[in-house]
Length: 118
Image (cartoon, rainbow, N blue to C red; front, side):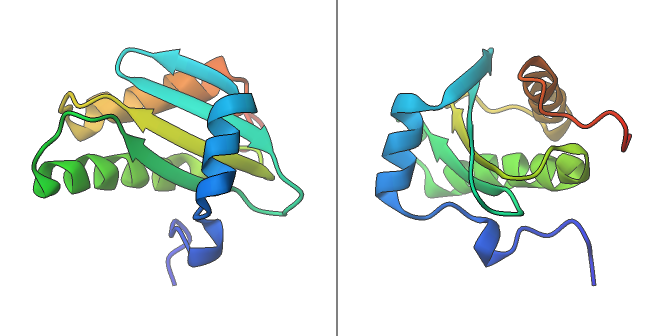
């Protein structure tokens, strides 16, 4: 079984939780992407990906979400546990490598990377 999966319990679903996060959570941002995070009382991280308006095609929206989730899966072993995480993405298409470097930058800017595990 793969270790870098995002299971159902690791996804943030409730609209009320997401709206609350966008209002009161800490954030880190760089060009075209924002990271909202706050501690939760769980032993795992929960994640969701939101897109700003502008990508009209469902194919393009889903591709951007898949890229962000794949980037997160590849670094989730190095992130501190017990966080709710929301990515807010601008409708500018980037490659996987560009998004990956943005996400690593955001997590390091927010001091959420566990450098002892790297």
